[in-house]
Length: 278
Image (tube, rainbow, N blue to C red; front, side, top):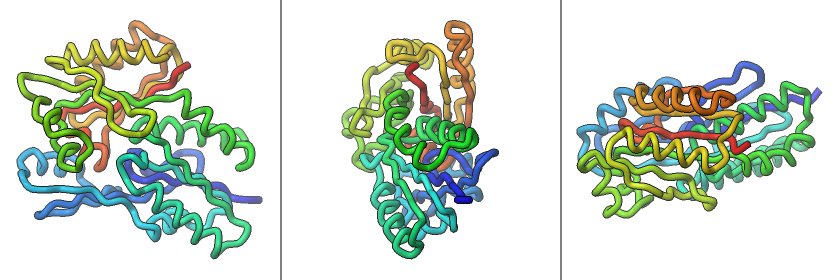
C-alpha cells in the first residue's frame, strides 16, 4: 500500500496533523543581530518583541531543496504546498526537491502547489487534503480537486504596520509610512497573482473589523470555514469570531496564532484570515 504525506513550508502555521503524516520546511528571518528559524523551537512572542524595537535591516529566506527533501521523508506520494511565489522562492525550491526526489526514488511522486497565498488560506487547503486522504481518496483522485478548491478560498488581512513588507520591497514605503499613524490600519487581500493588495485604509480597530467583515461577506463568506491567524491580537480575533457567529452562524470559525514567518509579515496586532467562498 502506497503511503501519502502532506508537506508545507512554515508559513502555513502548522507543525503537525492529527490524521495523516505531515511535515513542514522552515523559513528563516534574518537580521544583523539575530536569525530566527520558523520551526517548533521558535519563541514567536520573543521574536515579535525583538522586532518591536529593532531598527535595522531584515529579510526572509526560503527553505532550500535539502530542507524540502528532509520534509518529504520516504513517502510514496507527496503533496507539497507552498507560500505564494509572489512573496517567496519556496515554490521554486520545492520544485527542485521534487525533481531530485523523483529521480532518486523511481515510482515515487511529488506534486508541488503554489497556493498564491499564505497562512490560514494554506491551512484551509491542508485541512481539505487531510479530509480527502482520510476519506480514502487516492493521489490520482485528489490532485484534480486542488485547483478548483483553491478557487473557492481567499485570504484577507488587517495590518497595523507594513514596516517589514516595505523593508522587503513588498509594498511601497509611502503606503507603509501611513499605516499605524493615527490608528490607521490597512485592510486588504491576497491578489490573484499572489501579491499583497491593500484595499482600504481604516482608522481604529473597530472600523477595520467592520470593513473586514463586510469584505468577507461581499466575497462569498456564507457558510463553510473561516480561519483567523493573529499576531498578538487575540481580542480582535475573538471580536471577529463573535461577529461572524452572530451574523453567519453556519460558518465554522477557528482562531490560531501566527508562527514565525506570518508574525514577521503580519507584525504585532495583525490578522490574517482564510475563508471559504461557499
